[in-house]
Length: 120
Image 1 (cartoon, rainbow, N blue to C red):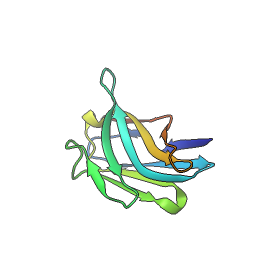
Image 2: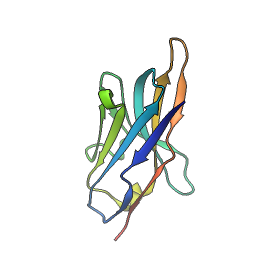
Image 3: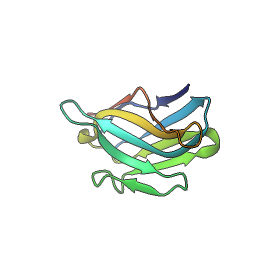
């Protein structure tokens, strides 16, 4: 069983920064892409940023230039550095991982979510 555990959420003022972390633990095979999603009240869950196994990244237009996704594959950890935060960034942030416990088998893993609130 593989679990994703997130940390780093909290309350921050507009213009501030936060860094989210997500670590996979358990019987890990290999992890391909890792990503961050978010869901604000009344909205659907949306992709924020994704990073491939080779560290190719892609971002939602709304966060380009402000957020940076990175990973430490040796630690099975993905990070999201969030700068210049805006009130509209307020949401629950979820970590996602494309886990392959063995060839031909895929697990779509989700963390429990961490709350980010941007407010003065």
